[in-house]
Amino acid sequence: MTDQKTSDYVFVTGLALHAYHGVMEHEAKVGQTFKLDLVLDIDLTGASRSDKLADTVGYDQVVEVTSTTFCARRFRLVEAAAGAVADAILGQFSKVSAVRVTVHKPHAPVAATFDDVGVSILRRRHG
Image 1 (spheres, helix red, strand yellow):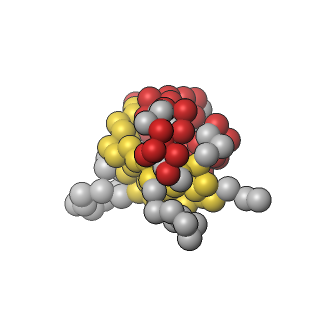
Image 2 (image 1 turned 90 degrees about the horizontal axis):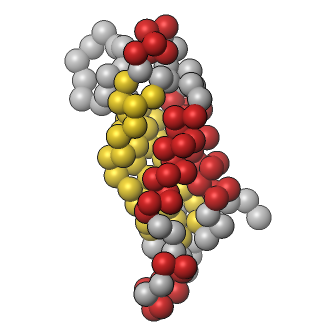
């Protein structure tokens, strides 16, 4: 996910957000708790030397942008919700060169026994 010069990431794992995403009508009414994992590709060379927040991205800001975007509207597909989060992160944090957003939907209405289902998308900054 990184460019050739760095292998640095900021991550948030297991962010629990209650939202109303899904194709089924009851999902829109009751909602469910989704878990999100975020991996932000960012050169942390400056932050590792300066010890200054200005040289990285704050976890609290990442969580705020993610929560606001993910919960702001109802998406039928978790693919669309994940894409909206990725776009928002790239739009908000210019230091982030790429982001992987994984959305876990552990209570998906599937007639099977499973631990987890979901999607994982990778978006890179263009230009």
